[in-house]
Length: 239
Picture 1: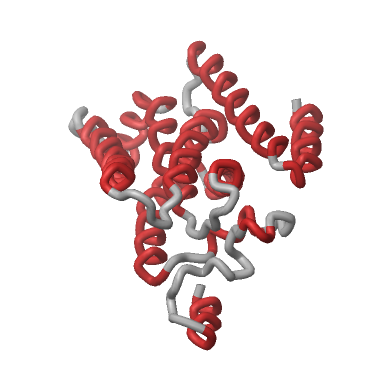
Picture 2: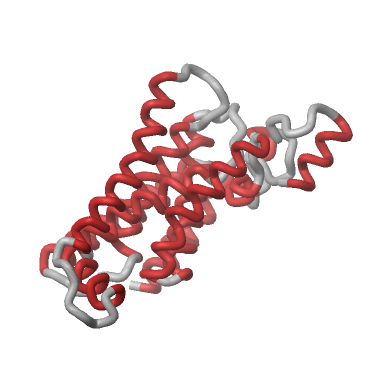
């Protein structure tokens, strides 16, 4: 981001929209496949970068502490990829920068974590934070409600912004894709401390929908069909 800002300052307005960045997703460079991930490293000015970093720290640290960095990283990367593919199909003439899709994916992954571990989180929190001593039974309930409020607040701000603004450079399609895939992959990738019968079926359904979404996007992008085939082969081998 800093490198691109210095480069733009030499040729044009500093901190302008980095559509010419070698990292940004651009309609003229669809065959440069790294852009489908690297666009998340470029941002539209310091405010865009600061907000995304703040939200990323807010939603990612609790997930990493609970589920580990590898699961969170895989979920984040998949959401970034899916958002860029959806944006390319929905707005083929538009460019894309920013990691907002990943932020929204991690936000909705909190909902998946709460759904899978609603009762178990209560017990873990009471055991860890009370130093193995008896604590108020409502403490875990308060924490869960706070997590729901934070995630709902982040999502509602985006919904209100999309309704209030017309046009602009914000890709709400990418935000929606990240949110949906974050919920689906959260049900599949995040740790489930106690597996119930109904959760097995739910996780299989979520896995099927997530794979269908990614494979269909890769297939519809004509120059990325080979990656769709490779993904299918990897999934078949893993199963």
